[in-house]
Amino acid sequence: MLTRRNFILSMGVLAGSSAAAACPLPAMDGGEHAVMMLNANCGDGQTPNVFEPAILHVNVGDSVTFVPTDAGHNSASKRGMIPEGASPWNGALDERLRVTFDVPGIYGHICLPHYEWGMVGLIVVGNDLSNLNAVKKIRHPGAARKTFRALLKELEVA
Image (cartoon, rainbow, N blue to C red; front, side, top):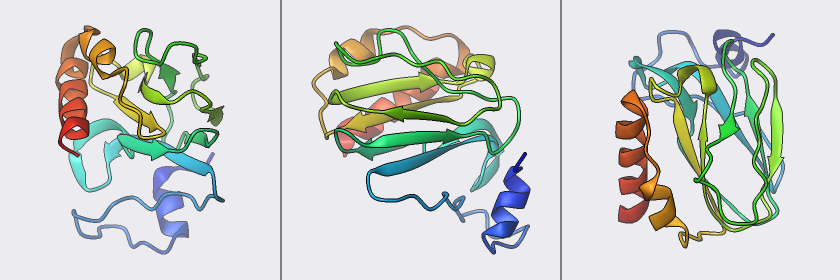
């Protein structure tokens, strides 16, 4: 399996690079995007269990591949945090998962083993924030509450 370290080294990034450096995302074709599932934030090794990027904006009809860069992670849609009419997903641990987004709106996703620890993310499809109020009403355990709150605040400011 491709580890984050080997992936980063294969992309020509030296180990021990600047803390401000972001993880290089896998190259994808138009309409294709990647979200890496990581044991630690690339720019801040003190932030464990993250999706990179934490917020992703895509167009209607685009696909996102969740890449298990580090072991022990998955991506699953969070009930109540996807637009009406959208299909939920629940990827297996340590497996790539490709999801196509055909319904505009905000999608919340989680790593099931690390949800309480705050491993959560948002995908915004078609720059549509129409389900923002519904998404904000969902309650979360532990650090997920704080992380989702920060991500949603970032969406509102942008």
